[in-house]
Length: 291
Length: 265
Ligand SMILES: Nc1ncnc2c1ncn2[C@@H]1O[C@H](COP(=O)(O)OP(=O)(O)OP(=O)(O)O)[C@@H](O)[C@H]1O
Ligand SMILES: [Mg+2]
Image 1 (tube, rainbow over the protein chains, first blue to last red):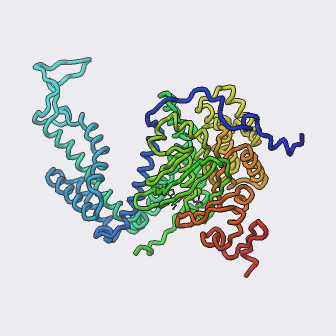
Image 2: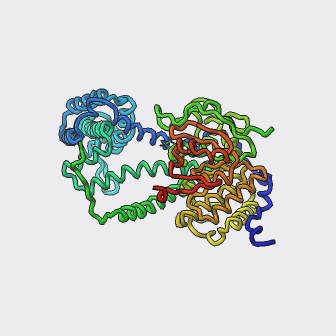
Image 3: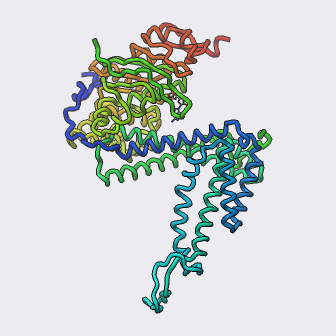
């Protein structure tokens, strides 16, 4: 047999189709976790693209100068950080919601997403701080009460432990501040095309390097999200089946590792691509391009 | 009469609500065919191939494979989707996304192991494929550190090892050197002779011509503008210009395209 023929010799099992060797096919019927993750990530990408489409829509807020919007939002966020009165905070929140409405952003979905995670987590982790040990005041929720003070392992145990009214107010205030700041940020991002937003940051005196980092993170976040979707799809094609929990964990783990390796690699390549076009560590920008 | 493999019936699809990629697409692919999907960048080749591979699903209309409607619910059944993916192999345009293990050998063994082949069979198959694609030297390397073409080869190997009946390849020759490209074409033709269906997307007319008998042409507006014999389509200058696959300076001599962009003033 010549080398030429040899090089296109099919292995025996490839001579015919079919897969007699397969031993156990999985009987599962549930949506597997890969399929679910893929769907969730796809939704995120669609959302991201939706954001751009909101920014392109005709609306009063959309037409406002990006720089002006940026300044107003920064000032409002700062103000929210200083205001202590809960009614005023609630007022600002209502104002933000009205603005969202005017900008034709789906208020309910957005608010659900904004309040669903971060402020809730904040509330949870701030619970210890609401205790009378830290913020004393009128008892609101009693956790325990005893008549005499006791000592445990040399530490004084207070006679009672409760969430004080003042403590709860402080916790709520923190949550409100975070939720409102997020709402304001979302409002800004959703009504302003990303490119214009970054340019206006720069005009406002934020160092070019920082803006560049922000801009690149944004761009590569979307890119990495797309990459992860395809990775999961590729894996799904060859996996499927009811994997054990540990196998699932292993898979997610190795996907994260692969994604990390890829993003590191990408960093190198991006840097080289930037070098190839004249980047020397100093970002050069034209600021006059903003309409 | 050959068996209908894939049937698209008024299929519509879009990634983003309100921005459809396909609108009411209808066509059929038969078992044992070699089909090229031609179109300019962004015309929707990858999207269409992903639908055939059961990764995305029509939003309207019906896509059937092997006479059965393929939709999200059906694919959620693990047993079904496993069987489907074993029959229909898909090689991604970006081989980067197909590689996720830390060794080339593991990468190729991943599919057969998941599909429940015995260890002995897995080992045998991986060795055979490594040899066939001349990847033996790379067996212990990390897939991430390979060259672009080597990654492509590993990606191809990781699908061939499952021995699918239908091979769907998205831009299979991009990044391959001419010798490997020629080798791949010959391999695919040989597999076709043994009864496999081969579907490739490409904007390389020569590849379409040597590999396939039938071509589907997608316009930039994502419409299916032509479905016919590849040898006729690659000669159809007007059509290819209209879908922006070639420009007025490209000439087709014989069956092979030559670009004379700079010599004809
Ligand atoms: N994940 C995605 N989200 C949103 N839109 C997408 C996504 N993937 C592709 N598109 C859009 O769908 C259309 C078809 O893309 P597709 O990748 O199928 O094109 P293609 O013919 O494979 O192009 P190429 O030759 O460049 O590979 C394009 O307009 C593209 O912008
Ligand atoms: Mg493509």
